[in-house]
Image (cartoon, rainbow, N blue to C red; front, side, top):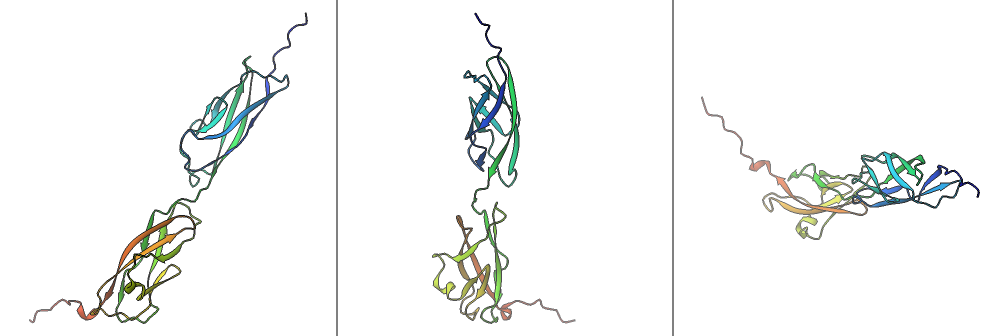
Length: 212
């Protein structure tokens, strides 16, 4: 009888997919490994991560994330994977795993100034809206929500990211206004209420100087 052929080491490792969305839950499957060999070995291959095990793990032939990944922190990373056949022969191959940037929701909405002199002309800028968002490249659209009273929308308007006056103000008639503003990044929204206060300098209490 002819002798059994000598077992041969694997020659290549393939990964069906090498990207994952940021914020995916732990143990989400990234892709599946397959191994090639010159002797067409159809046996069982054991996969291990020799570099990068702090971020990914292997379950059978499936590559999974071991942590929740953040594109803004790590946009891609290298892993080194070993495939070992039944004879203990192995091959190692590196892969680049890409962390996809997903549009994340804004976390805060602020207004730089919420007081205004009651004597200003129509069109005066009161303050600038700013939105905190994990995604640095996002642009934001600011609008009044339906919760904003009509007396406020008749008095103020939003131009770009600026809150401006739309009518003349009179502290004696109304000393404060409530507005509810929404910031949209193209997908997600965040809303917040603000109180806008006209300032009447005739109502300021000045310090008194005693007579000597």
